[in-house]
Image (cartoon, rainbow over all chains, first blue to last red; front, side):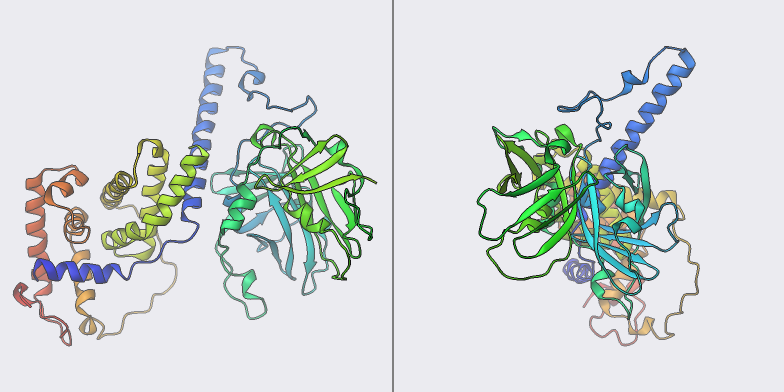
Amino acid sequence: MNDDQLRVHLDRQADLAPVPTPDLAERVLQRRSASRRRRAGLLGTAIAIVVLLTGVPLTMAALRPTPTVGASPSSPPPRAQQNPLGLFGFWSVDAPDVDDGVLLRLDSRLVVLLGCGPVEGQWQANVGGDFLAGVSSWSGSCSTTTAGLPWLAEAAGFEFDGADAVLLDATGTPTARLHLSAPPGPSPDMWPGYTEPPVVTDADRQRFTGNPALPAGLRPATTDTMIGRWIPVDNPDSTPFVTFSDDRSWTGSDGCNGIAGRWQIGTGGAQIGTGGALLGTTGAQTLIGCDYRPIGAWLSTTALAGFDGDTLVLVGPDGNEIGRLKAG
Amino acid sequence: MSRDSDESFRAFVTTWSPGLLRTAFLLTGDDGHAEDLVQAALLKASQRWRRLDNPEAAYSYVRTVMVNTHIGWHRRRRVTEHLVGDVAAPPPAAHEQFSAVERTAAALAALPPGMRAVLVLRYYDDLSEAQAAAALGCSVGNIKSQTSRGLDRMRRFLAVPAAGADEVNVSKGKQ
């Protein structure tokens, strides 16, 4: 074999190499973040050991991160910056009263594969570590709602712990530990979209990692200032509205179709521009035509909410305004 | 990394990972190990991304990390996989049906990882002796000797004629 023949053969052999997975970069960045957190954890452990050995009266306040902009004394502790795209994948769910074998599949939508069949819905998350999920449909004998999956219903945030992801409630208490899992494989009784490995698209990157600042002049919305009934500023002939309740649910209409979902003001604070992070999910609706306003689409694509005077302004992950609402 | 660095890292991975994976596949001879190797090397690169100021430098760095990591894995000889089921035996005549490319792959796989890396860098990535020496952190003389010995071993491995391997006659190094 001469040199040229070896080159040809190596080229042809290299043609048999696998192609990179589309989410390779995200996987690497996620592993890097996990590695840094482990190092930070080791540092914390080292400090604790030093404190134990030396008796230096350090308080936990000295180890706590500097408060973020907009944090109030009653706010939950700020979360570290996260990459929501790291949640894309299949996860086995480790939570109270959850059967073995339950899988959570996250990509642009949410699917929970229960023993009784798949449950589908929406989820939102942002780089501030906020998380919100809602169930909108089910099949098989799984007649459950979001409330029937408390580990999901109570989740308001997320973080990574090594290869695991942890869902956290509003106080920072874990509601579920998610272990990365292999896809379940095709099933003759299930739509292939439920069992295929998730793929990160450019739209997903925009939606989940967009980190816009609230436009100048807007005051960040808070939970208290959002609760109530709102109608579009350019009130059409139909009667679209949305009512935000204090249990993180909303109900409304696009003008001729009733609709409901979940909402949450994030606690990401400084990680989300200037505050006012808003996460929303929406459920199924009828498709009666009229002079409508896409209330559901507005809420499921909003990244930030702020006030221009008394007007509630919804802003998308690209920083562009989505819609304006007034009290009504 | 800042957001800008993250974006440039993503762009690098998108553009260069297919080539890195091909090199990794030649180094390891296995899909899964090749993917692990690329991911491990990219992880190291991501941790010093700010200092890798252009894609070519980054590519060279990642390739070097891949080679060294692969050699390190081989040295440690860690058992990382356990087969828990029965594996079907290959068909008895499989060896005789090897194509020339498959025989080359087998000959390459039979080399020690360092020697294999030298041949891959020299004859697949088309690095000069000096560039290969820089990538592997050794002398040009070492590259020359490893190349010579590697080719000699491959020729001897391939000198056993395979029935049906009429795509190329590899005996005695001549076509």
